[in-house]
Length: 353
Ligand SMILES: [Mg+2]
Image 1 (cartoon, helix red, strand yellow):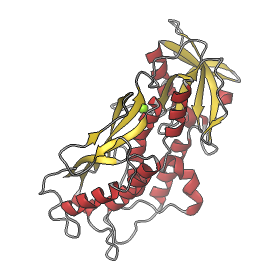
Image 2 (cartoon, helix red, strand yellow; image 1 turned 135 degrees about the vertical axis):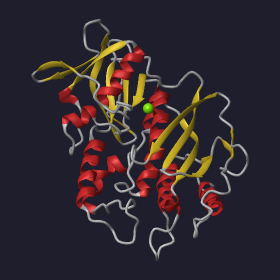
Image 3 (cartoon, rainbow, N blue to C red; image 1 turned 30 degrees about the vertical axis):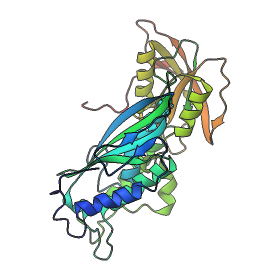
């Protein structure tokens, strides 16, 4: 992890070099298998197992676009930044080897939040990110730091997967059945509740105006958790890959209607989803389950003869539909309801739209 010396030079309580050494010593506490050399040299050195290929994904998170400083606690921002990358590894059935984090931060985010507490926004961000990293055995192996007019976090995840065994989007065939892990729509429902909470809570004292995320009352923690602290399905992805059960898989980042269309396009197939079978989160609406993004559950296809269990590593698996042949003039994805069938158009998250 390197950066220009001038960055954060006027940060007062916490200079950039101190921040770097703090990140380095905290990152060193995470177990590392596959990372030979981490933060401190010009490059990290990774050593995947001899029979492994590398799976690599990058994700950009920008304040105002992917999170809001006045809505999200810094711990949640750090968690979500890493969760997005880990979820992509889970979708490929890859084991995490290392994460690389590049941070651009306004100066105020490196300064103590309150007069009495030495803690800064970036401390909270690292708490959230490193706690998930520890839980998912993902060492932070490097990155970059810079002062920036807007908070921005770019994460790169490197995973290892046995040669030729990664779960792809492209292998689904007509007759396969469709499954999802966990429940759907919880993140969208949680975001809705967080928005209300942020709008109704008054400004906290002693914090700059744009650093005022609302405190989450205890009674709302469980409801907001799918949005604030989504759990990447690493164990489930590894399980699917080891068993060779999934013919195609991806993670639900943009919403079922959009992500299933991606899977169908890559596999050259169509699909039907049974509305009554959807594992809708208790707090969510049907629309949120179909179109709300950021659930980070896995969607996968498996042969009709495959024996798919009801749960993997404590997370339920639900059959929600099946793969059909692609026919011109027919919708790519059809929703079967009690009232008949209708096309399910991609209405999830799309950038630049
Ligand atoms: Mg993905």
